[in-house]
Image (tube, rainbow, N blue to C red):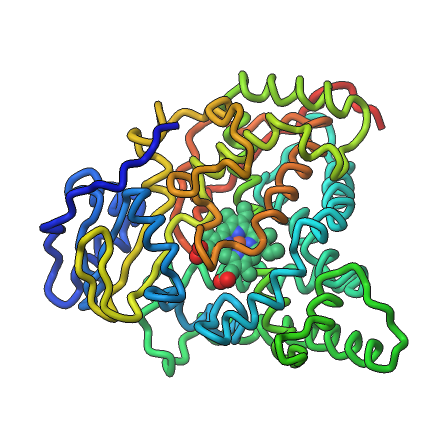
Length: 460
Ligand code: HEM
């Protein structure tokens, strides 16, 4: 990978001329991926554009992205994310700012530290195994749907242990519907609808949310009461950890705050991992050389057994496959920020309230930082440990103070799920290109369908 120079001439910042009032909104709404790529290709690394009547700056150079992201919570803050998002996540870590955010971050982050993730690894493998046990040679599957079932089960069990029982699927279905509505809001630009408009989509969302609130509310109440009565020892799941967390003043999260964090962890962690795994299977099917190397590693490291957390570091190529998949198809494809105050970025003046956006999709596919950028080549990460990652050019989990709290969880989860399933099964994805669609996440625009084949003689 190439190194980055911070010396970039930025003035004057060019940009495309938009329509009166709408600015560049129509072009952005039609195809955001092409829109941002063309900004970089036609105008350069820092471009002014307009989001409706609001001026915005788009930065594509890794040096600016690093500078920008390091200043989040000081000079910049996450941009507005819409009515649906606010309803679903409440006042959680994802939606808080300033002191509130620091408090939440300090309480949520310890629940997904590497030590805790180590404890969740067994669940990750078991959930993948259970699903994979239902696959049959020659069977037809919708890869995205299968991955969703697995990640939902993982998030449900790591959050709530086995408390949900058979209700896990009911909650999962409601949360899937909610995630869909969140994506639809972005896709249709309902993002700009005033909060008081009672649209059909909003009524649908509130109905699903009522199911989620009832389920999660019941779990939080029951567990809290049991913990307060001393009938319940602290369990090894996220809910217990959230209930036990204390802030700097010794205060714990209220039941509503625990609900907000639990739903946020589900929403933030489920669709992202599902999407990452779905693209990974797609890429492996299109790149038989990489698949052969993956099979060889799985046979060498695991032989006839399923993986455990202890194998994670040894599964070097598996981790590179995931890393390369996150480069080409980053589930979070854009980071929309807003200047809290007047600022300078790479020498360019920004006014308070201006939007400043950067996109993983654009920077991850830039030939200046990645040779042959459109090729799926896990080998490009040879010799790079996760710790060595250049956060400026590869940032699927963001970077800076608000970087993804679940990054370690997600990396271990995707690698172990892939290893568990790929050891036994090969997914022969149907021919034809699957085009990505940039909604809330970078999703396949059509289902990724595959025929299941045995990768090696099944051992169980
Ligand atoms: C492949 C999977 C994932 C991807 C690509 C991803 C990506 C991201 C990105 C880009 C951000 C914003 C970072 C920034 O602004 O600098 C973020 C934030 C966040 N992610 Fe993830 N994420 C993934 C999985 C997870 C998982 C599994 C969890 C929970 C277990 C999670 C929880 C969160 C939370 C709570 C935040 C908000 C952090 C804050 O605002 O302080 N994510 N994630």
